[in-house]
Image 1 (cartoon, rainbow, N blue to C red):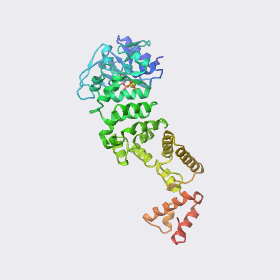
Image 2: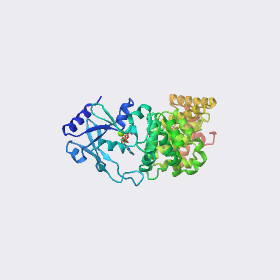
Image 3: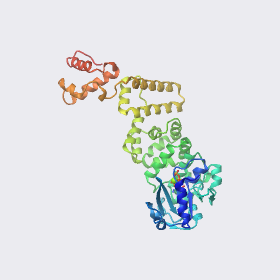
Image 4: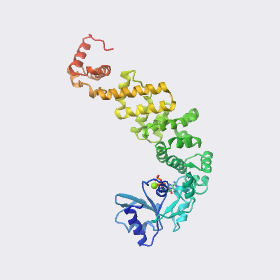
Length: 413
Ligand code: ATP
Ligand code: MG
């Protein structure tokens, strides 16, 4: 069950008379029958002691008692057993105190399913009732949810994220504690955005969304930047997450569904307040702006495909499809299907979409006597013409057309 690198780590600690356990997410995932994506380990050895044992140590948070060890291309995070200290900022412990008792270490952890220890033989040490909760499939706080959330308000997001990612129920007391006090004051937007993204991308996104809405945690987040949206649209928030169920797992699609009911200005404000990259923000805004575009207006349709770019154009069609499916609207679904077919036909025929795909260049237009902004305008007129008549995308024909236009012989309508 253990890989060679882990065996080696256990040997190193054992030969020095120190204990070492796998802890947290890795133990949880193994018990849930999943392959852990990384391993957190915990020990009674101090960071100073451990540093001397390895050729290469990555400092991860030495003051928190965590070092990273690189073994066979993977980083293993090893944290010295810690005891709970005071929290006064609503997010971080004021200080760090080490202990040699693993029981103390697990009791400061967030949820019972994250509080299990496993030794090298695969024996589980459960001091928090985590095994029962794994079996029942429940996220439950270690200790009183109110107190644990007061210490670190990010745990509210972590709990719902865990439920959504692993398809777990949440304990009533945990849920009630968030409902009664959803504040996350003191938690950075970047950390919340990370949790939100993971919920949006999780297999049980509708469940995660339901919990976010019903506990008031999502409204609390929206209240930070777009309070008017919350008072207008609270009732529709759950719908957004149900749309996501029919979408491929792409963050821009999920975010587009989340903000679709907002006013365009609110979308921008929210996405910026969350510090999403300008590229992602731009993609999401465009998906929402173009959601109603239709292939029956060829010029608009192709212009939209050109502006989005091929990859995002596919996303737009997926976005529309997810909304139609959620609406169970047959007419709408048919329209979306027609759009997808139109797009596939355009792709298959290699019909030009971009100015760069036009058979004439700006220089050739300039040679006809156009200058300055006239050049771009002429090229755009030609592109529109070619949108309607792709077979006309030939250098001689387009130049001849411009010449005729110049002499007022043609009407380009
Ligand atoms: P994943 O790696 O899948 O996100 P994980 O449970 O390993 O899940 P980490 O963020 O890697 O999550 O944290 C490792 C462990 O540290 C957790 O399992 C938990 O025991 C503890 N932990 C992490 N964050 C907190 C927190 N805010 N409060 C209390 N304990 C925490
Ligand atoms: Mg982890």
